[in-house]
Length: 145
Image (tube, rainbow, N blue to C red; front, side, top):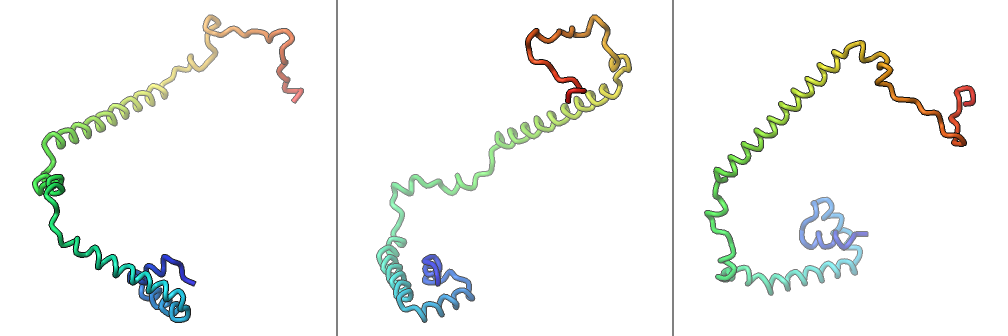
């Protein structure tokens, strides 16, 4: 069985040669589908006969005015566009340099942490530990788990 899309492609001549041959064999054995293909072919011929003369008509002046001229299509980019592109590239490159230098600074300072900072903070810098509220939920101890 062939699909409607394949039948249309067969009528249009858009199938690969191997598939075209297979569809032709199928249509030879199924006259109803072959008749549908001929109906599509007649419909296409009718549309071509009706609309092909329109292709040879000149473009109306009101539509021609809305078309861009040949000079507008092929104009090279202006200096403003080029300058803006260069400026954007410089901003991106500068941002990358600044980010890299800040990353190096952070990495270097992180490596040179004094040993005193890693030990216990002095008593005046410690946060107070508050007891749990009375009647509130109790945390399980390691032995209870």
